[in-house]
Length: 246
Image 1 (cartoon, one colour):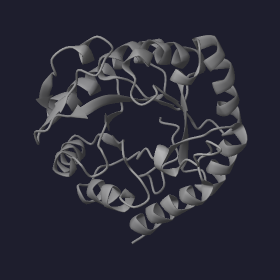
Image 2 (image 1 turned 45 degrees about the vertical axis):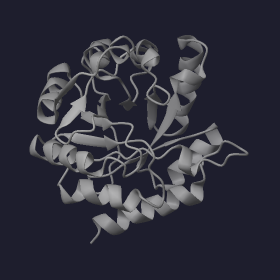
Image 3 (image 1 turned 135 degrees about the vertical axis):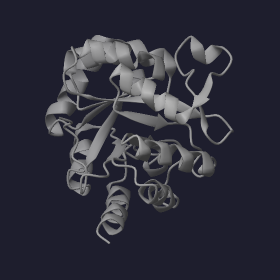
């Protein structure tokens, strides 16, 4: 079973942390309904990433989300290796490496998302998000087919990135609808901030997506310290609580 603490079994935040102290503060601000994103791209090698991420895993009560780093496809292999060592609660992965990562976990529990990108056409997503495929022509396929392929590979959700906030609103709504029909989870990512968060979450809830993990990163990071602002985490969680407790 997934180890993610969804609020009302529906929504869990995913935010970045700059330090262990910042991570602990974030978990408290979200009352535990949060994943702490630590980016593999910030480390020179897998060994150093594993050492530090293990500390985050312990200090946050198993709320570690291993990230690529702005969807960097070149980090997909490092993420898979880190996942094999740590078996984290949540793993961010490019579309083509979902099966590799599930195998690295020996099919044990661990939530793996699959990165797909907006195509510019409602109903289609680009699945060429890997280190080699992203350098070639886009591979546009129906959203429902993409979901089915992720299910076959052992993935748990679609990560829709980069959204540009509400820049792909109708595409996002269609993706949400297809996820709902497939009883599949969705992770909206890219350009989400405290101003558009309610609208983006609202679309996913309106379309009846069963589980939603919105990623809110740079917009709530204090530029001088690099810390995620806990007051913004509280505001986002308050929106989640309000929308789900209606």
